[in-house]
Amino acid sequence: QVQLVESGGGLVQPGGSLRLSCAASGTIFSIENMGWYRQAPGKQREWVAAITSGGRTNYADSVKGRFTISRDNAKNTVYLQMNSLKPEDTAVYYCNVLRGVAGDPFASWGQGTQVTVSS
Image (tube, rainbow, N blue to C red; front, side, top):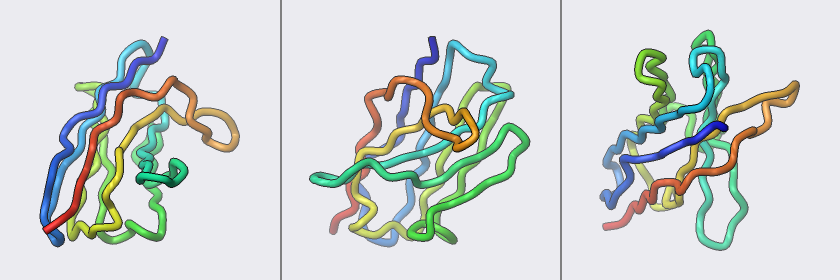
C-alpha cells in the first residue's frame, strides 16, 4: 500500500519561496511517475506539476516558471520548489503517484501540507 507524507508548508509573504517535500513508501519509488496537486478553500483539487520516472517534468500554466518539481530516488522523495508565491497559491498541497495512460493519481491522498501566502 502506497503511503505519502507531505511536509514543508507554512505562511509566507507574497513573492516568497517554500520547498515542499513528499516522502513515499510502499512502492518502488524510482519507477513511479509523481505529481503535486493543490486544493484551495471552496475549490476542487487541481493538478500542479508532474515528474516522470525519467525526470521529465510538466507544469500547470498557473505555476510555470515559478515552481520546480524534482525527485530524489535515494530518499523516495519528490519536491516542489515554489518561488514568487502569490496569494492565489494558497492551498493544501498534496502529492501522489501517477499511473495509467492518463497519469491519474493512484494512491490514497495523504494529509497534505498547508501553504498560505499572505502579507
